[in-house]
Length: 316
Image (cartoon, rainbow, N blue to C red; front, side, top):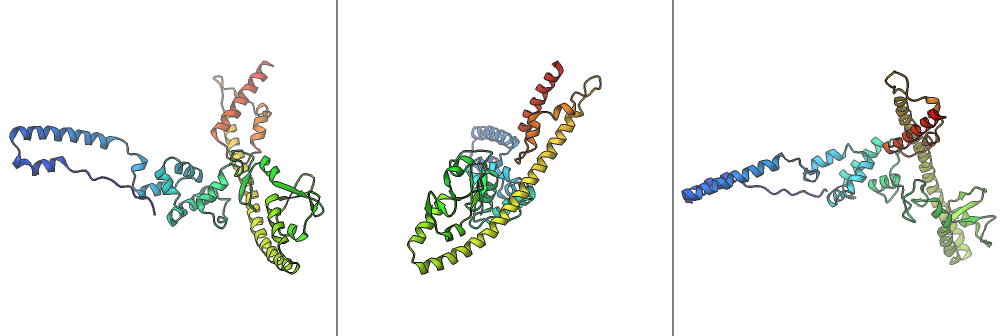
C-alpha cells in the first residue's frame, strides 16, 4: 500500500564489549572503552537532532496527511520521490480516502465524485492547478471544459473551436445529426461553436456508413449525448456554486484585513487610514471580483497601493 521505510537496527557497543571482555588484554580493554564512549557520544548527538519527515513511520506520516489541505498534499507530493510514491499510489484505498476527505474538508463546495477514469488525486489536481492542458502554460484565466475534461486558456480555445451557422461550417454543409450529438458553446455574437476535432471525427464516422446505418448510429450517439449532458449540467452547477463560495470567502478575508487596517491608530490615537479613501483603490475593487483564494502576497500588493494612495491624498 505505502512504500515501507526501512530502518537499520543499531547494535549496542557496550554489549559487544562485555561479550569480548574475556579475550581482551588490559591495554585492549582500555582502548575499547575509549571507542565505546566516543561512539556513545556520537549516538547521543544523533538522538538530539530533530528527525526528518522522511524518517517518520508510514502510519505517522499518513496521520499527518489526513489534516492537510488538497493544495498542501499536492505540494508535499512534489517534494521528493518518496512522498510522491506514498501520495500518488492510485491503487491504495487508504491514499484515495485521504485525498477524498481532504477535498470534503477544505473544498466543501466540491461534493461530486471524480469523473469516470479519474482518481481522487487527479481530480484535485484538475480542480486546483491553473495550467492549460494544450499549451502547458500556467494562467489564472484558464477554464474547465467538462465535455473534454481539460483546462484551456482563451488563446488555445480560440484556435480549437469552429463556428457553425445554419448547419454550415466553413461554407460546407454538415449533417444535422452531427450537430445534435455534440456539445456546443456560444460566442459573443450568439453563434454556436464546436470543437474542431470532434466535428472532424464525427464526419469521418458518418461518411463510412450507409443511409440505414446512419439512422441507427445517430440514435446510439444521441442516447450517449443525453447521458453526458446530465453529467455536464451537474458539473457546471457545481462550478457556479464553487465560484460564488470562493468569491464569498475571499471577500470575507479581505474585509477582515481591511477592518484591522482601519483600526490602526498613531501615537495621538487618530486613525491612520480612512475607509472612504481605501475603497477608492482600484486594486481593492478588483480583488473582490476574483474567484481564486486570497493570499498574503495579494494583501501585500493591495496594502502597498493603499500606502501610495494615502501619500498622494496627503500631499494633494
